[in-house]
Image 1 (tube, helix red, strand yellow):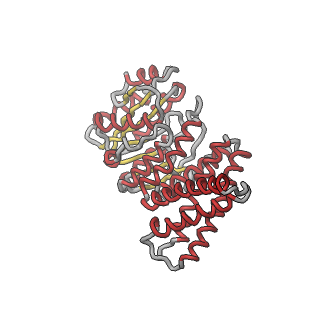
Image 2 (cartoon, helix red, strand yellow):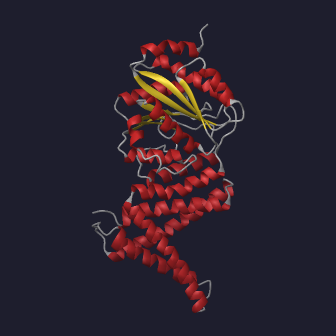
Image 3 (spheres, one colour):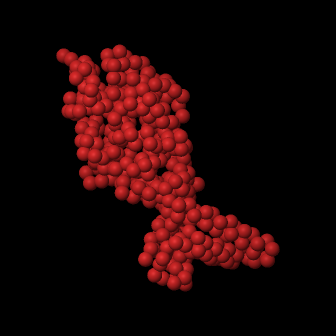
Length: 383
């Protein structure tokens, strides 16, 4: 009986002049999963016409025998390759994989997939079908109709939803519902257009940075539903460091995609300085009570923020409301943002058992985005 790898070798000659799909599989200690993933991908070759498959494993010097397993498979298949390097993060591994794939193999499309069995290879023909229909970015989505995360805990579902909300609305990719999915197929020509060096993130946040960059380069996107299951074996590599990097990367996505957001953020930072400076001045120099001073310093910051946003950030917008009406709306939005900040902090800290500092950052980030979106689309809504 012929193995999967033997069967796929039969297609190499007849597919020599066809388009090429290169699958990039980052690995770190995935010895228990990698062979099954590779064989499952090559099995789909018989279901896809017009494309030959190539797999590039990017291993971060695994210590569990992952490299040895892949090297044994390479002996039986010319379309399986591996590059190695030090463990830095998922984003760094993908950058190396992209550079090597584009330089060495010049594929027509590039697949991003996890090597742990969480991404269903039987969907590969569906991805390629969408590419053949003219889409240049096909995302396996957990958040469109038919997609799901049945084995996620409530905590993980909420964190994933919140992360996607921040990326979609800050990064300017609202039309894509799953911006953190790791199962994608991209036209190689659009990967070449991206400035991968600009995507400074080294961990999991690389996924959201890349999708924003691809859309900015004009990639036409399509989402297909996927059911995201638990890994077959081993442990998740997602760390607290990755989560913090993800949050710190959110403002960068906004700066890169939205000039108004850049201005709004600058104004917001100036408001923080005015708030803090006003509090110090009122309490240290005027002797005002600590219970009263914050009320005045907060109001001073709000008035300053409103003035700069009205006459600088959104200066070019023609609105139907007067200045006083916008000032009232601005205050209402500020109050709403404060409630959102506290609610997310309380929920994340008390019920999701997230570190209090990280929970506060989540609250601040979500509140800031909501604040910007409501003010941009209501207080200073274009006429």
